[in-house]
Image (cartoon, rainbow, N blue to C red; front, side, top):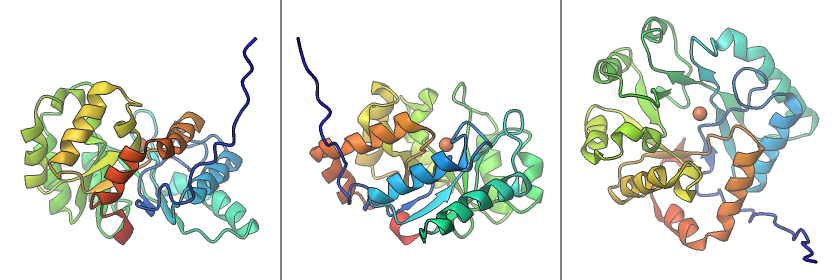
Length: 244
Ligand SMILES: [Fe+2]
């Protein structure tokens, strides 16, 4: 009979130190497909801290069909997390912005103040199904409204995988690119991993994020500690998170 014993698998305390500021996660309880309650939120925040994260700007989905969030819906649950952190004497800077889903319903939102991850940076995502033909226009409009667009997980949009020049074009249009950490582990599949690696080799990503939603993500993030080659590659890459 085989006998498995759980080893002490605590990840290194500096595993995510190269990120320092995580600018993509879903840690406001009960507002999207991220954490369900304050307890889970604080648990995830403290686990990220234990791996070297020093500041968190969490980014709940704003997707009018599924998650019609705004500063109004997010402030109260955010404050509950803040209060629990304070009760635990945890002084980690914890803020919220949003991950805006770009579609026709986003267009009128640009007339009001948007939630920014840092300075005038706005985190946006697009359809996983098909390339939005209006993307160039939306990116232009976001900038005309005074914001810096940051495209979340560009490596996860399968319709761009065979088209690295498309990513260069996004950069030329003034859009920053934010890689998902777990894309580099194969968590989202081989093609996403290969695209993430190609983007890094071309020096295209500007920022990196955990996009942490749930326990499975957390376990996969902790597992990166075992992949020394990946850790070295990540530490050498000039991500700009630490200056945010
Ligand atoms: Fe996300």
